[in-house]
Image (cartoon, rainbow, N blue to C red; front, side):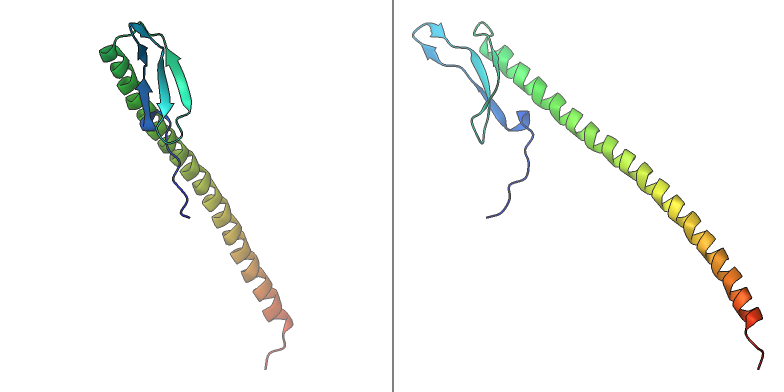
Length: 112
């Protein structure tokens, strides 16, 4: 079975409110896939405002998620650049040592 990609909770959520007669329940934000409740709001919030709240939350959750990814990429790039710089320095030192050892070896070998 193929593994499902991780989903951002609010991006894959919906709100529900049950009405029994004239009595409204709390608004509940639920994950679409699992139905797990994420948050509840009081029933006094009207429909239009509740959907505006959810759309606002979805918009800024996605912006924050993408900002986090970009932040991590920048930090990862800084880390990798530092590693490359360090390895380039080690490589340079090894090259110098190689030349030094080759010179010593040449001086030790008899000429033919």
